[in-house]
Length: 234
Image (cartoon, rainbow, N blue to C red; front, side):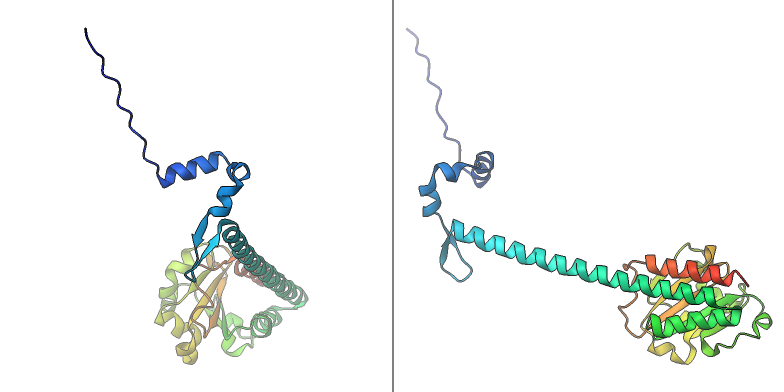
């Protein structure tokens, strides 16, 4: 007579993953077992314990505070964008009203100084410097041939297709800001025309973090488009 061995029963180990999976699959578990909910105690940061319900309420409050902070941040971004849009609109109006190249350059300088709060700004236009004798803008305006040796340090930027933000080379700062170069911590370079065909606008800040590679450049690109369009009239 033969005997057949009975299969040995192996109890499956209960893991955290198993518990989480079960509770996720049965979200009504604590509704059907309210006594279990009342018995659960969770360690608190203060060293004591709190009930699961109290812990859930605390987590919801923390989540609410986080959402409130995010909402405040979004509102502030929206306000900043509205302010920028108003400044760009004002610049466009002044450029439309400008009569001649000298008045156009003056309108751009005024916008950079009072509207956009630039610590330093320089408008560089390509061409024969003698052709811009009637432009009276002191340190703000610079006329230079595009192939001038002084622009060699800007070669990569001039071949690009959009604004550049961040810290710049010493040679670039010296060319743009001259005696004030050491005070400039960060710079925004805005091409005027496709691949800076007309020139470019440089906006300098003493704050090393004001212009950085990770910032949005949409408004700078729009400013460049408006200024280059205005300059193309002359």
